[in-house]
Length: 158
Image 1 (tube, rainbow, N blue to C red):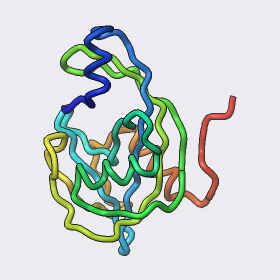
Image 2: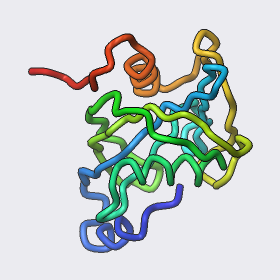
Image 3: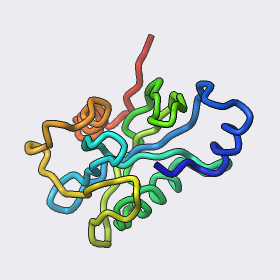
Image 4: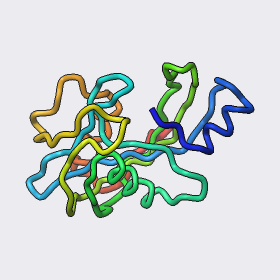
């Protein structure tokens, strides 16, 4: 998996020490109501598009960049659907990270869905009632919140 340059620079100083990073994820829908999912190269499971914000990058811009980089699809922002934390995740190289994730519902506007980088094995459209069995739990929750009837962003209220 490609590691953002700023994370690689941090890792030179902290090694595999846990990092807390800002992330974004996207529930991408098309005009037919289908969902765009990626099959991740690191674990083989299906997931919504996600990635790490670059320093100074706005979440909306990061979501659109990640969708384009990973799937070749251009999209427009609809609304923030959930804010949550994920992790810790231990990567194959031993790096450990946790994430603050801002999930956004977006609508595909152009482009052909395809594997557009080395982060994914496959990219495919699915109907909401035909999601793959090996969909990550975090993606299942993000889809549920994005497609639910409540227009407010979901977050844990403690």
